[in-house]
Image (cartoon, rainbow, N blue to C red; front, side, top):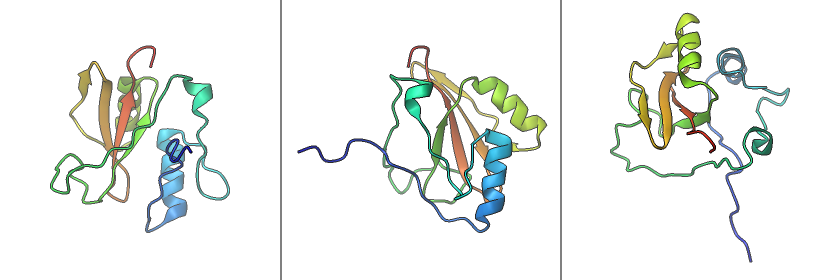
Length: 125
């Protein structure tokens, strides 16, 4: 019997869900539906793509400066172009960018102080 076969969603609390949804629509291009969420269809983006589930030790500072107990990682097509656009739009973009065999990683804070990881996968992934 198969048990868990993938990540079904990410759910979190927000002080103002409508306003936060609008920020994600405007700055990250999420197609926020009337019901307030987004349904990603990965097969259209990358048939070989994956979604990662990974718990972190509770003492990690990887989510800093956010104090939230979670961080959302979004796949992006062109990390450097998106980070430049977010900066031009006045978003709180972190200065650090990591590039490795796992791809390119950058970070931005949403208006409620949640750190978001933006990930450009390596070619072919």
